Length: 225
Image (cartoon, rainbow, N blue to C red):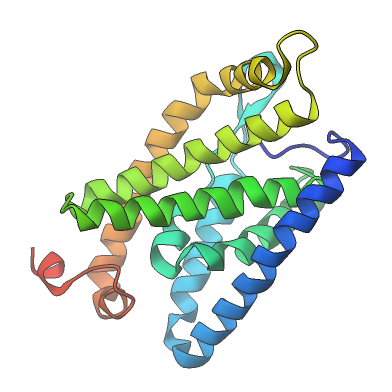
């Protein structure tokens, strides 16, 4: 769920926006540097951005009238690193707030932190760790993308619990309630997103293997396999 417009208290909305700003600024720097050095990677960057926009726009009904959706940030984090996904995610969330009424302007910072910072950093870390211990390539992709999705929703639940602690049980009780609301739909969505990301990267390996080797996403032996 993107946290909807006006849902967070003003102090929380401002705080999350301030927290998200450095990630977006640094991400813009890394993207500009990469594109200047490797302009041929523009197309792959566009694929990653489009993948994030399309998947995160697919709202699906959840319990209690809320909604769940994939995030799509794992693909870009694997290809370009997690920093690049902060500005991409910010643009995606901004357009969705304006054009689709999905999320909001006042909650943009909070949504950037959950979907475009925590998710991508988790995806990149899990992908690298899985490769380091020789986990099969496809399963490394699946783990990275699906866990990025789940951690985005865990972060959102924590943000909501922080803003609206339970009167009796405090943060922990509120977090449990928010996380439980989305678990039934989000776990299947995370699995589906992981599988779809594997399919997309396998297609990129087939048609763009030189670029992926240069980006250190795959090794020569993985292409030969």
